[in-house]
Image 1 (cartoon, helix red, strand yellow):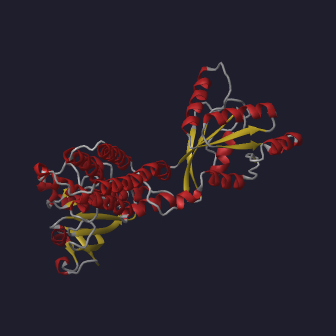
Image 2 (spheres, rainbow, N blue to C red):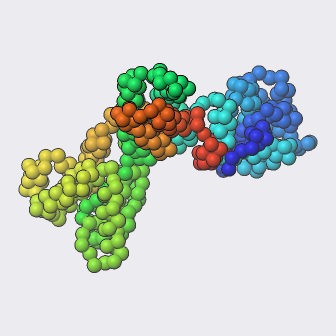
Image 3 (cartoon, rainbow, N blue to C red):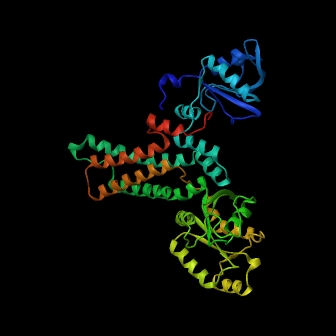
Length: 460
């Protein structure tokens, strides 16, 4: 839902800390009248006479009733997150106190904030661009070192600066093309066509690099989907429990215990992995188990990594080679994990080592060589990529805009090859500028902003 101009002038309020009982709760107000309104119910110093970025102790009162002893933090416009007057009230963490405080301010004319409204005001007031605003939400939800670094890099303007640089270079040529349209009857050429081609090709290479980075960026943001697969009783559920160090999955000697997949997350080397324990792969007449096997196969096809377990206590080299051939045809990176070394025959281990030297030997039940498995997992996904300082695209909206930019730039090149007139070139350049501008917010609509900020938590 888009905001009206009058709503943007409102003073707004929301709980900025998580709901529930805690040691403290922080209630945030923003708007032109935030400090004045707070001062009317705060008993301590006169808040309207205090400097920005100062904290003051006192009580909040509803008439003669003391609601709580509080600390009030002041941020005077424009040196605040929203560039408006901002007050942050730290109360005791009682949900009753929070409700009473917010109800008091609502009666005084303060409006409850909508999801993301504080960050939206920061964007509208020029605190940062749209890509940086979206990174605020990513930073809040980051749950690993790599996702934290990617969000922080974007919030601090790394991605935005690259986009703005591309756009400014293109605007320079676009203005020359537009100037030609004003002198179309005189057949003059202000924009050097070869220079334009070189610029578009350079921008196109950078845009394509950003597009390609989305796969990695998406993995960093959402975790590496890692499927644990293998025949029934290969020890998949035992391995999941051992990796998570908890009894997440039911373990049984009965084949086919896992009928559906079980999923949980684990951070390895600062990267989140989504480990998925799946139903055992085998032909079965059991209808429910067959559905589980089908889902396993689908999960394997869409995984970023497969840990394929071989049960060394119940297999042979013929079966192992057959399964490995099928995995290679799948085209998904996989690790050959030989499980139950404590129950294996020595000649099978020797044969497997000779035939497949990259196989990793573990005992999930005895928790042997799990550190070696974790190290191999990180090695296979090339952790160095997650440490790069290069810009990564983690937002599907940005990815879509970059894809549309690429199409428009290719049209510019095709137009140059076909020696089309300036008006057609100008149209394709404008499209490229439009889609680049969508990323950082130079080009927006109220519906776009409402959609983006509605996904934020209330209070941010």
